[in-house]
Length: 263
Image 1: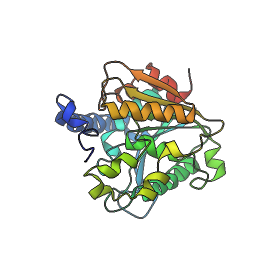
Image 2: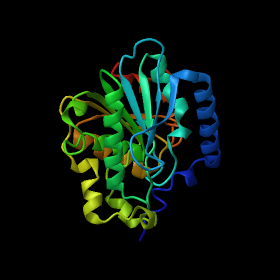
Image 3: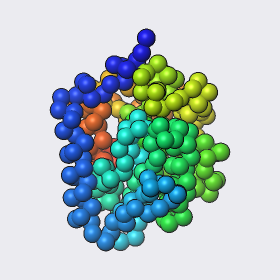
């Protein structure tokens, strides 16, 4: 028995095929409009995908938001999501968006390590507090950054907020999907890379954010993650897996308030 249908988001979203090209257009327009305040393709590692984009606000930054994209560790890169930096930028925060190598070229555990390296380089280039936000697989990746074995203490100590949007916090069900032909997870790695099996971080505000119209397994994943970590959970009415991230572009949204620790 496979769980492919349970984790098939696009199959249950009207016009799902229109979202990726829309994201790309909006992201490119955003970068063009930002001009010199956009640093594109800053290298943090040796491969062609180990790059991050850094967007600067006007004036002195209040801190740095790091957004990690999703795509089941096998799709997309940061260039499709630049426009989601708009909300935090308008609030005076810098925003960094790393890309990473994808499965099957690397394993999920390798991606966690890459994000830790990217975050360390981002921290070296910025000052002040850090907020992490990730979507879907990115939600798993930002949660993994609380592992003391991944990040230097001085970087981890700057993280004040983590918002995991529609996260895959328990990877073990993915062993029963056909996508595991690409992910190549085994039981040990799925266990080690699942935030639900980690100790909750101390001194970090964690919010689990999910759309009410998501697939049932994503609602279940969010509830289990929030319960395990004792984190706040927000279920947003009328939002599905692809449009639940839109509010990151709105400086007045509740999602941005959660990311920046405003409420």
